[in-house]
Length: 427
Image (cartoon, rainbow, N blue to C red):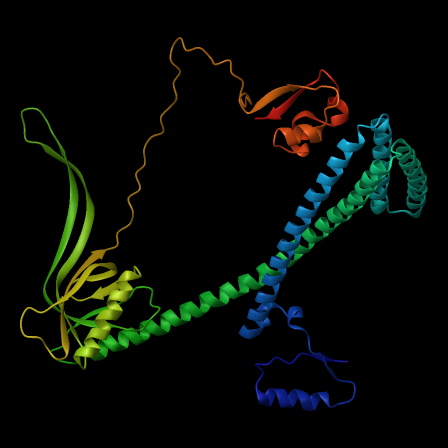
């Protein structure tokens, strides 16, 4: 069986020939989806469609990740608040630690099971998970006994619900990050191909415009008594050429010369550096009518405002110039098909990059080394001595911080929250 894909840009004669071939028994026409075709084989329309589709996927993934992270933060806050509430009950901390240990054991064993390769290992780990879950259930029941009141039961139930939501959110976050990575890789492939085609189209357009510009200049030179100075865009993104008649043009080069003074003699000149290069003069802009000439003038003004770089061919032949000033005036009688302009062009020069020797750091004699430790956090935090009944949640609310921050600075509350222990709290 032969599988053949027909593209939309295949000529009708070839298309008909293939269809006649497919009428033979045993031959089948298979059409692939655009995401199954290599990007360089897609039409421009198909490529744009796939590019936009994958870009939207990446954006959706990013939004999902952001929302899931918000959910994780929210559920963790519920758990922390419930822990602080429940820890006030005698015996809760010990039973809570036992439950956390059992919960961690189950999670670790499930990770081992996911990595297990042999049936023997899988069977052994599955049995361990079963026993660990029994311990987890027993620890939870023991924990519930401590909190017999309705308020504690409600808070414990709320915490359990938050733990399940947190677990699901973390799993969802991992999946979303993995999906975003794949979607972004696919998006980058289409993005690269799109940029490649855009660059090729730009080069093609520039080549065609340059050919048109040369033809226009060549044809214009055959016309007598008209301006022969040509002005056009340096990026060749347009084939428009503005022909100007130059009157008394002046090219000015300005250099900065450093003068070095010496005793009992004339000063000597150091190295000079060009600071500017300008071309100015009176220019005539011609058109079929006064309105047509004004239209050209407005177009040149607009390009100046857009900081466009030009090529000028006339009294001066510069490939990189910008118009620093342009104005229209009337020095004599107004013409019905021309404008008198005053223009100053400035040559686009390369930026000056000054290099200097790096200064070596020298230690002064008798300098005393500072005894201050690097990374000192003095001034950022304040010290607090734990009192009976204190909780991370209560301290976080009182000091406008979070339980997560206190845990990061001081460690687990099970190791730090006892009377007399000193904590670091952000100011």
